[in-house]
Length: 116
Image (tube, rainbow, N blue to C red; front, side, top):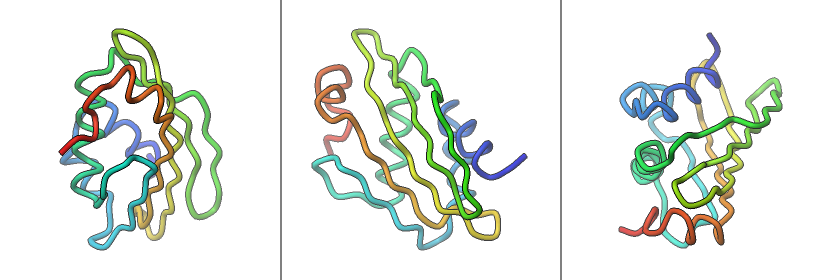
């Protein structure tokens, strides 16, 4: 099983312990949410998504030699939002994570998702 498959399966099933093992100690994390981010905050937001969403569907995936681009539909009780995730992988560990959220839909259908 490759790192990207394991990552997707881990966080979407709310297994943050498994997901955390895939991140390098100094993983770079960025997102477009209006809040500071580090790996711990990102994992907490992914936990909230996995716990609150009715389901998380991986709708597209493009692999590269050094990572992958993924698109998810986050389907909640009142509507859905999208997440684009860009992963950089080296030596079977994730070195960079970039999240681009549909912020308007996140604020509408997943209120408080990234509030501290």
